[in-house]
Image (tube, rainbow, N blue to C red; front, side):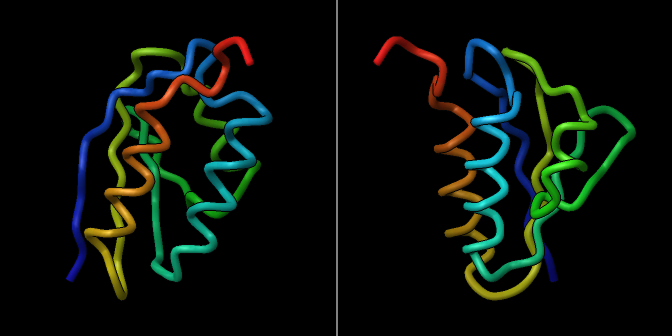
Amino acid sequence: MSSTRTVTVASSQGLHARPAKLFVEAAQASGAQVTIAKGEKSVNAASILGVLSLGVEKDDQVLLTAEGENEEQTLDSLEQFLTTDHDGAS
């Protein structure tokens, strides 16, 4: 069984290199099998090249799918990541 969730990306520069790397690390650490899809294209969320190839920009909607242990917790944490602006002034 798997769980899915549609999330709107909040980061002002989308999922470019740095936030994509952090997103991939979070997906890998979850222990679940996670995919991220934009439009018709779906990729392994644990693959930096796959995630970058989606070209996710601010306000894009992506579909997350998690399969395995703690699916809902995994989706909760990845949703929180995607709905946070990682490009804001520090």
